Length: 233
Image 1: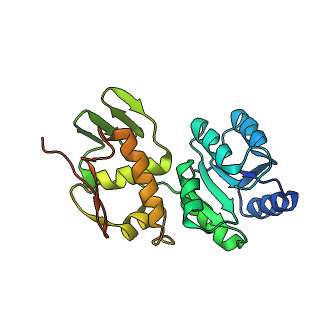
Image 2: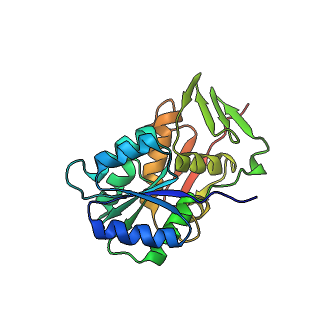
């Protein structure tokens, strides 16, 4: 049974970058469209579903960060930011806006293709949890359906947020190191990007914790990683 090729939207104001990326990604089997601006990308996303979006940070008009926020509000596509900025605060700003990953310009196609593969992969449902539905303190997580219900209301998690939560919940009451989490959720080429985990854990806590500032379930293990604390029943 054949699998449909992933659909990628390239959003960049530079025509040459769009041409090169479109040709290179198409040659690797992806179905590629492009947009010249954040505004145009939003129009295309309303017309068609994409699996992944390559989004330039520095564009005239609507900047990449605002475009990312607006895309994330309506789409679950993986978002990789393309940026010339390499400072940690710039990376965190992109992740906070809803991006899943970032690649610093200039980049090679080998690196970009690896990032694309990593962000298109899904974490398989783990049998370690012993159940495909986990419930605790008014929270219900349905792994196969990718649904989270918190105190009677459905909460929308991005695919990467769900993957991270799923991995932690499937390994309850165990302190999981940063590197293991990154490689399990993003892939084997990751391990040093602890700022990813910090941002994503904050976002998940806002969605499921009664008091995100004093988490009960998603616990930080200083200098080590994170632990999902499954309440006793």
